[in-house]
Length: 121
View 1 (spheres, helix red, strand yellow):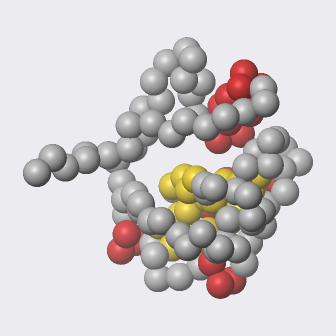
View 2 (cartoon, helix red, strand yellow; view 1 turned 60 degrees about the vertical axis):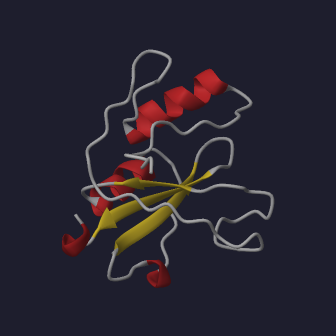
């Protein structure tokens, strides 16, 4: 049986793809894929369908939520706040798998940042 070995890409529609790619590069360090392939660090990845009526993603029409691993959530949140980006945290998001926060890109797409616990790195 063929087995997937990792995520090869994440593609989504945007009103202004160039501006959105620049925002992701500036604030999250993700290289603009129009220029190069983003090389990410190996690590844990969760692939999990949610119920169609979940409220976890935010807006009911939101079909996806991307989660990025970070090595220092506190530093990431400080950088984002310094750039004027709203950062949301909730105690119930933190668990034995790690700590989480949520931001939104300029087009309103939710982004979850995850600092894995020591057991999940």
